[in-house]
Length: 198
Image (cartoon, rainbow, N blue to C red; front, side):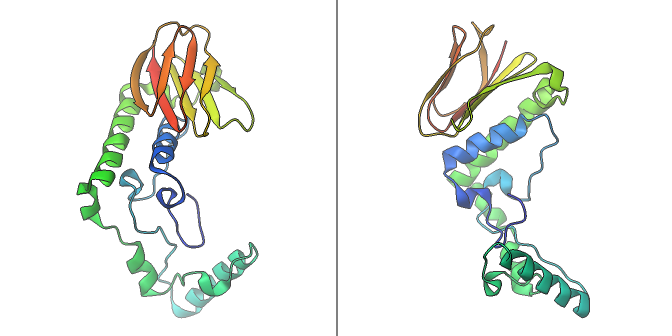
C-alpha cells in the first residue's frame, strides 16, 4: 500500500480476488509481513497520513507533503492536510465492517493464512537457499518452492500451466480461485493462488 497521496488501500485499487492473491503472497513471503490496521478485513476507510505537531512544525509537514506529491503531478490542493482533524477522522476504522459478509470473508482468509504461517514456519523462512522461484517476466504468475511447500499465484487474466518437478502429489493447505497441483504441474486460473505441502 505504501505512503499514498490520498491514502487508498489496496482493496480500493484492485478486485477482491486479486486482493486475496496479494494477501497470500504477502503472508507466504520470506519477510515479516506489514499490515496497515484494517487491511485484514479490507477496511473501507483510507489510511491517510495524519499528524499532531505544534503549529510551526505542522505547517512545514503539510507544505512538505504537498510539495512531495506535486513532484509526481498531484494537485497540492488534493493532498489531505495531515494536521487537519478531518484527515484523522477519515482514517478511523469502522470496526462494525468486520461483520459484513465481504469484510468477514477477507478477515477469515487472513486468519487462515496467518494460522498457516504460524503452523508451517517454512512458509515465512528467510533462508533463500531453501527457495526456488519459477516465473516469466510480464506473465502475471509466479510459482515458488520453499522447502516442503509450493506457492502458486496468478494475478493475470490468462490461465497458467507451469511445470513443477518433484511435485507429483501435493496436499492443498489453502487456495483461492481455480488452482491445482498434480502430476508435476501447477495450473493457475486467472486471479488465483494456492499453498500446497508435500
